[in-house]
Structures are given as structure tokens and as C-alpha cells.
Length: 169
Image (cartoon, rainbow, N blue to C red; front, side, top):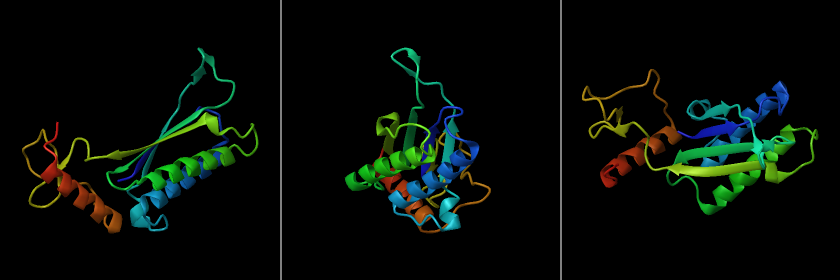
């Protein structure tokens, strides 16, 4: 499940520009993971968390917005080329979203592509590949609506693989 933590200062973008940016960032996250962003099932498992932050530079409030993005995907989805490409694409999308209201400075946009070795707080059940809570002995935990499709299958396969090879913490 690809996720993006977007740290965007309050008022840095117009509401319309921010909405358009978040949709574009979802597309970029999926594209650079190798998935089809036009597939609604694939889109349903891509989450963006927006964090409102105050940014200080040299101990004083920043004179222009600074943005931080943490893109998290299952391990194996990013190679060096994809990492570089998503950094560049997110940076350009953010600067485009400012619509010329500020000087176009890519140093105000930081992007951290990360890979997650296995789902936090859940491990696949050995018999079904369904997630179970490590703290629970009540069996598989199921979401209200389980995503399907090529990306969901790849994620489930990756989780099963890691359970067999990773002893965990």
C-alpha cells in the first residue's frame, strides 16, 4: 500500500491548488511504484496524509513555505532510477502548484522515498496471507473492503515473503 506523508504549511497554497496537487501526488506515487493511477482499485490503496506544520529556518519562521514529503512503498518497488524520478516529479509538482507566487526554488521541497520491509502492526497469516495483529490471538483481521488487483496481489506476496524470511523485531 503506497502512502505519502505530505507536510504542507497552512496557507502555502490555495485550496484549489492544494487539492489538485494532492491528486497529482497520488498519481505520481502510483506511477513511480509501477502501478496504473487510472485504475480505481489501485487508487483506493494509495493514501496521502496531510500534516500542517510551522517551519523555522535558522530559528526563525521561514520566509517562504518549505515542504516535506515521505513516500512509503513496499520494499522492492523503488530502484535508484525510480527514487530519483519521484523526487524530481514531486518537487516539480509542488513548485507548479505554487502557480508562480514565489521564486521557483527546489531547495524548499524535500522528498524522502522510503521502502517498508513489512506492514507495521500486521503480519500475514501463514495459511491465508491475511493480516493478523501480532498482539491478537483471535485470528485473521480483515478490512471492511479488501483491495484487489495487481498492486494488492504484489503487496500480499511481498508480505508473505517477508514473513518467511524476516524474524521481525
